[in-house]
Structures are given as C-alpha cells and as structure tokens.
Length: 57
Image (cartoon, rainbow, N blue to C red; front, side, top):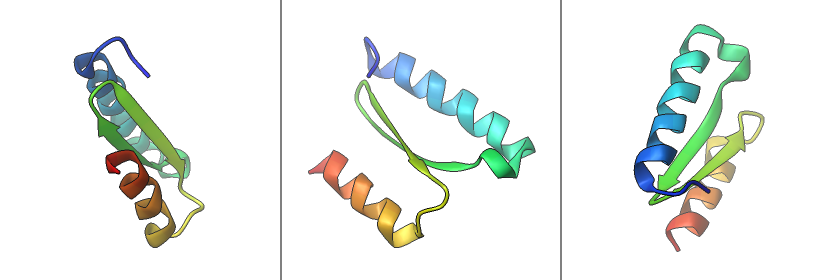
C-alpha cells in the first residue's frame, strides 16, 4: 500500500521495467488506487486472476 495511486503506479512501472530485462523475476502486478498487489509468476494465469478479482471485489 502506498500513500497515493501515483506512488503505487510508479512502483509498478519500475517493477515491470526491471522484469522486461529479467524474465526470471517476472510476476503479475495488479493496481487499484494506492494498493499494488504483486503475485508470483509461479501461479497460473487463472490463479493470478483470482487475486485481481479479489482486489477489484
């Protein structure tokens, strides 16, 4: 959780930019307002979507 949505988005953008160059550290990232949920890449896409659904609940 971040103080505001801009901070959460900036962190997500940074994480995703690093992951582009290092696929081994890739993950699923979901953003809603100031909340950034980072989900392991070892989950299936369907499992990761469950986290997204819970966030957007």
